[in-house]
Image 1 (cartoon, rainbow, N blue to C red):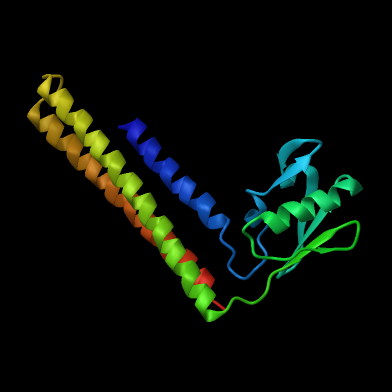
Image 2: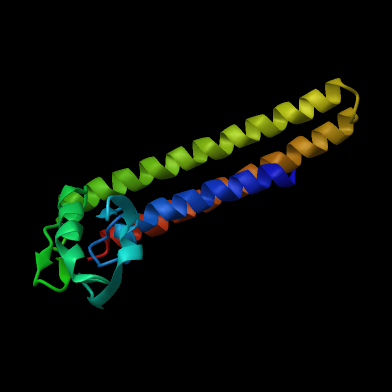
Length: 180
């Protein structure tokens, strides 16, 4: 049972990480988590080659550890799917987040719901695997019919708990995006 609950927790954690990268109109340094910078021929995460700070609500400031990295970081940001144009003063890079339009907010909410639905599907797949395991154990006479029924009930309760958690996450993130 623990292994299946652990997998469900990982699905929730994965969704949390995905939601952290969705920009909701406010500057959130996690939108840069997937950005890789060419650092002496090696692709490296942006966080390892620069200091990232949020000096204002709608601005992310990127201060490279080495001055010669400014151009590489700027190039990585331009080729990413952020949709933001970096401002470069030679030493630091600033990303200014514009106000989100109503249409863009609705698109983001659709994306949030889609990612949430994918997480629910993953949790239900884990439930199916757990139920299959219980049925195999029952067939092999490792557990009784009553034990199998109890375990299936526990699995269903776990599934309901994590699906409800995903629903709550979808609602919270949607509210965050729609708040102006």
